[in-house]
Image 1 (spheres, rainbow, N blue to C red):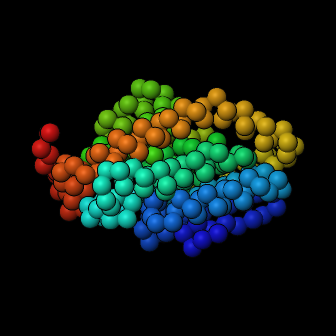
Image 2 (image 1 turned 180 degrees about the vertical axis):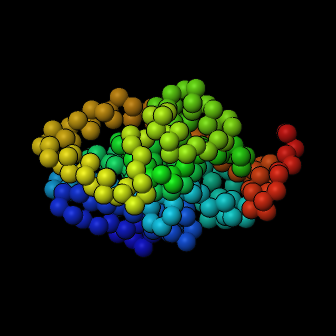
Length: 266
């Protein structure tokens, strides 16, 4: 457990909570990759844990990456193209792999906006439940980037190729009911009932035998894992190129200043 990632245990269910509520649970901060890896490695080793509930503290699931750091080219986004690509591999991709390779079912309880990296980590979970206030968006192009977290691989599997292309190309943000109709989430609940609904779902899951449960999870993941690794590597390289462009700097500056961006169209 770290301050930015909290865990609570109730029987065979562990709840993992992103805990930066004052920053809408941004991800990719220094140490996040290590924190996720440690938490999920511990889960995988403990065969008395049979299900994970994954959620965010406060009014957001996760707003994704730190846009101010993008503008200022600090932390994850500092250095040369090679440095940034390594930063993605060692931080963002560790978050992604940790969730994807979790040995037990993961339920995302999406309790508010899930945008950018926040949207894609929700998409890595086996089951997604949404509160009424949840919103989902792959808004990378809006700030001059691509899904550097493997989202171009994750999203089409969850909503199909056409819907994924629409969300990525237009940076459209959809509400919970639209997400339900598109199959991105299984159910929508009043916000105040979301966590209880996730716990009820978890209770059904943990009634299954441990070995068979873990084997079923492994089978559901096994055919796709090599493709994810290839997608992550491509994402690291291409994203690093974009982080050093003038158009990206203009996009994040305009976003922070709440004005339309003026791109060079280069």
